[in-house]
Image 1 (cartoon, rainbow, N blue to C red):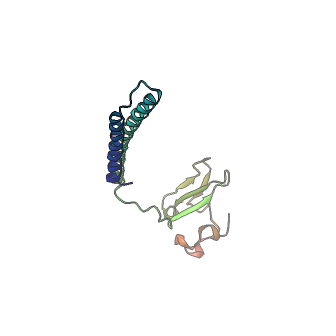
Image 2: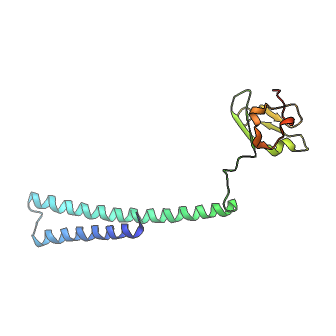
Image 3: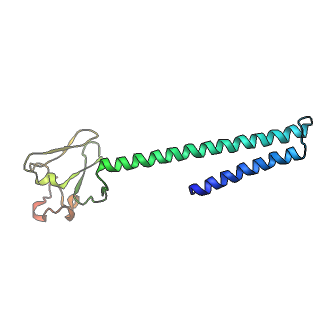
Length: 155
């Protein structure tokens, strides 16, 4: 709901409770009768509810503003918009020990240094770029950019 709409509704609620208070005073509803005590108590509770809603709305606005400022700061820390949907340069391997899926960059395969990729769950080595861990063609697929003749059928 828009801020202005809520503010208007809160103002209307306050006016309606004030109107009810004025009606009971105009009708000279007194606390001497049982009905008078009930009516005056209901109107008093309504006033407290409206005041509590108003306070709650103000706190909600304060928290919303704070959340927006934190969101802006996080965006700045991340360096702007990050496209996390671009995953075509990732390799997925199933860990032989715990069967979790381990993802790593396809660049690891072309790295000149020896790089071991371990499972974050059980720390089993799932890939080493020294040629000792060859993948099946169906695991890597064509999207990695590795030519078919470099992909072996051993596992």
